[in-house]
Length: 169
Image (cartoon, rainbow, N blue to C red):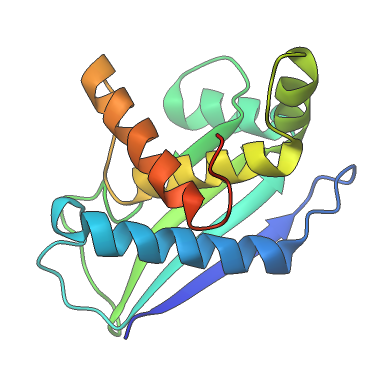
């Protein structure tokens, strides 16, 4: 049985995210992905007993800074993923643990997205978990450089989100 360690930090003062709920639901999402996509992911052929990842909640000023410094994109993002394990061709397992990396989410962008579109069916928690599920796909080595890859990622996200009760996303 794999142990999943999810660490969260909220540095955004205007949304008191239920971090315990985020941790529990993120574990469910990741277990789903490992079960259904494990052989296609960056985890394939590695032996491990635990998986670790971090989620940081911040504002778009922070994601703008990260985007500019690390991705050479001069704009804020709703999510940035640092896929430490998937993006490193010299992957290693330390102490039977795989550190997948970090998901950084701008909570003000989540709120802005939900409030901007009146036909938007999601509330901010649903949008938050949509982004977390998307970040997990990146941490596992899945990208969306073309339409087919994007459709695959979103399709898998929808399936995973059903596991936590978000089946209308």
